[in-house]
Image (cartoon, rainbow, N blue to C red; front, side):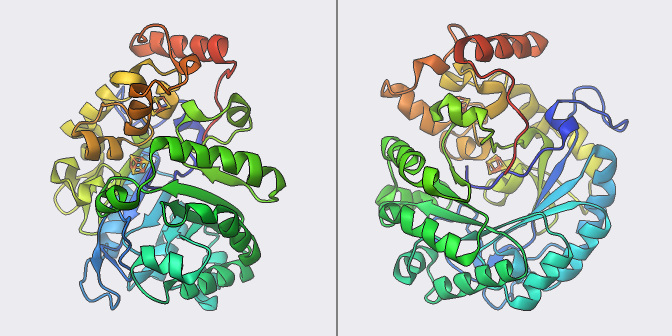
Length: 408
Ligand code: SF4
Ligand code: SF4
């Protein structure tokens, strides 16, 4: 998945709807993904959003505080309890601190995805004071040449390293995120060492996705599913046992051993409880609306957030299709109802519809490399029966039992 999941509140994870403003069948809106900057100070070759390169923040493509306030006020009665700040580069936002303070004063949990280059000691202290819950910093290689080649701007490695150090010095424990491709896959161990030496609390390995600018990079330097799987196994076998901080890897549930699932390494996309708010005020399927106008469901300038969440035809269709009408291997997978095809944005980008099978698993299935033990004999029924079927199948067939709530 191209973004990092945030924890679902318990009620939402259990599928409860304790909010009176919600009609039957509409899940709580637990999390807003705020794409607060439509601009970036780097030009990363794998970016799926493809924001303007605008290091001086001159474009004006930033979420207004007015829109942020409105979204919080209208989102609260729907169940809103957390936000993720991303972009572009969120720290480019000219009123970033005011925005964070506003969100924290509203009692929302705040997580941040940043490239780390704009963090200094003072900002790091501010983030600590604001009790930002989870923060990730991109480290796409263990040396400047490797990192900067992907990030498109010379000097970005040194600045990301300094930013990460500042965060750690302030008492935060950022997650280092490394996007793997043919040019850096050999550096996994070095990236883990670097992250540890900088004071990171965990490391997550992603791999280049065929989305946005990543489409071209994937063609030129992307890894095949089999190579990705081999790297995941290498991490589990050689790096994780010796490493004092958690290591994560972007790999679908069907390819994780039962032991790993039982350990609770279950970060997942909670897309049915998430809405994207883009820098111009658009309400969308997470960040996919930046590049796909058909995935924008409304606009805060003219629409009420509750109306969009409860009535937008695109969202009703998403809930109708995911997870019960997922196609192909996802429709037959025992993880269907928890995994929900890993990332519907990626599915849409690559397959042009929301309920196609996740491309990684579809490719592995076509090649006969999808684990048979994770397939049901027949496609499950819909509705409450589907839940019961899922429970039975995962318990009896796989020994997984009920899966715990997600975490980053
Ligand atoms: S087949 Fe689909 S539901 Fe199963 S693990 Fe892969 S992406 Fe998830
Ligand atoms: S669907 Fe959107 S929120 Fe979910 S993993 Fe994909 S990009 Fe992230």
